[in-house]
Amino acid sequence: MSPSKYLKYFLFALTLVSAGSAFAQQNSLYTMYMWNQLILNPGYAGSRDAVSASLVSRHQWVGLEGAPSTQVFSIHSPLPNDNIGVGLTVENDRIGPTNNTGIWGDFSYSIKTGEKSKLAFGVRGGFAMFQADMRSIDRIEADDPAFNNDVSNRVMPNFGFGAYYYGDRGYVGVASPTLLENDLYGRTLDNTNQRGVGNRHYYLMAGYVLNLSADSGGVMFKPSTVIRVVEGAPVSFDLSGMFLIHQKFWIGGAYRYMDSFAAIGSVNITDHLQVGYAYDFGTSRLNNHHQGSHEIMLSYDFFKPDIKTRSPRFF
Image (cartoon, rainbow, N blue to C red; front, side, top):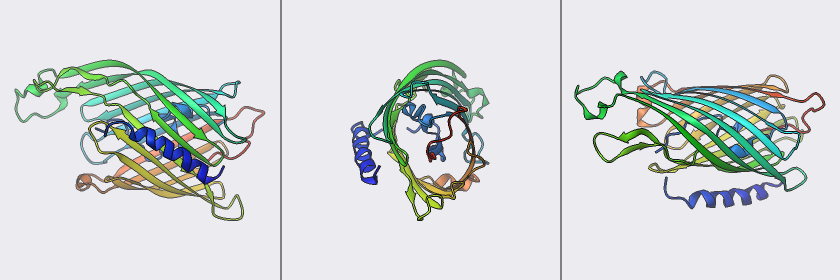
């Protein structure tokens, strides 16, 4: 498929996202999102023609007390009916005195739009377990009303949707993985009318792989982006560029708007196993208070005995 065709779908998806109101970032951030988009988009389920499992551990703002720490495991696969994909994602996110654990099941249905392209529609359902223990916070005032209710435990069901258009060299997707804006605390905060709410997030992602050498196994370049829209915060985005050398080594970097630059490296140890690492250099005013962010990824594709990848997968 030509780059112009992806640009057409990208602009259409961008229009859908921009139609919402100007949307605080609450969902976890990942630098190596381009290799496992199931975290963000249920339409991605089953797109790799294999049982694909991934484990990511991210430690953000190392050295800053209470900084975010996130671990996520996901697995997805097509069913014998090639049009259907299923997936499972388990994510744990700890920030300061709060801990949020989510378990999500994904289902996708794809339509063939060309010889090597498909358009998939996905839905997600599951729940999050939110815990907040304010007793662990040092108080300036012992009788601060914000801490009248010290502990919160909430089980919050949710669902989401996604669409994902992809071929052998590129993709465009749009998703909102959690549509319900759950009340996190079940009460107003600070004796006011304000409540802690999990805001709805929207994502737009796109990427394309370009040959930089006459030899298809030589050097390739993959630019990609993810744009986030969430209520109460400015639109944010990541831009990344990765070089693939001899179908084995990935090296490149990324920029997160008004937040950080990142160095990214990955190696395809075998046709099935990939290991990646990213280090984020902060650029915000918080930069003087931490030593950057670390992210590690491990993924493995379990292929059926009679299937060897029909063509290499780059995302």
